[in-house]
Amino acid sequence: DQQVKQNSPSLSVQEGRISILNCDYTNSMFDYFLWYKKYPAEGPTFLISISSIKDKNEDGRFTVFLNKSAKHLSLHIVPSQPGDSAVYFCGVLYNFNKFYFGSGTKLNVKP
Amino acid sequence: NAGVTQTPKFQVLKTGQSMTLQCAQDMNHEYMSWYRQDPGMGLRLIHYSVGAGITDQGEVPNGYNVSRSTTEDFPLRLLSAAPSQTSVYFCASSYSTGQGVSGYTFGSGTRLTVV
View (cartoon, each protein chain N blue to C red):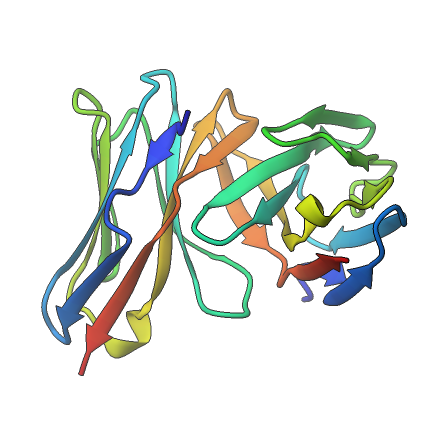
């Protein structure tokens, strides 16, 4: 059974607008969350993370929101740029040792 | 300033052959992990290590062995390759903070095909 779900396999957004990527998880014991992005034929790149004691973390154009009661994580990219087009994965850290990752959302930012 | 280095980048094996995927990091990170990525799926954890001499199993450990004799290196061994192990393998390293892990860095991957 999947511990982390990204229910939207793809998302298309116009350049300059907001991109919102969503992620749901099953276990309230998860204590650390992250997003990474991946371009074709490259390794994943860490993007942003958030601890379970926070509900928001910002880094430039990227903001991650955590709703613990809903077990929901989201990534906001504002403004979206064509170079943001990639596959985005959310991950959860359990017990400081194990990461579980979602199946990814492919973001396409149109010029 | 290499980060996480994986070798080889590509490999084709015959069923039943064994091989070792190499992973090295130069950031003195205590945590290292191996993942596999298959189409339509996120990264799945194979094995991980929280420090030299300490390893543990992840989600999909069967058919793989690891060891961590030094902080820098974390090789992944396929004992008897099977077509189901055809995948892209990523190694990652990170360090612990008071609230989790940080500096999560991935290698560029090894594309393995087992025929």
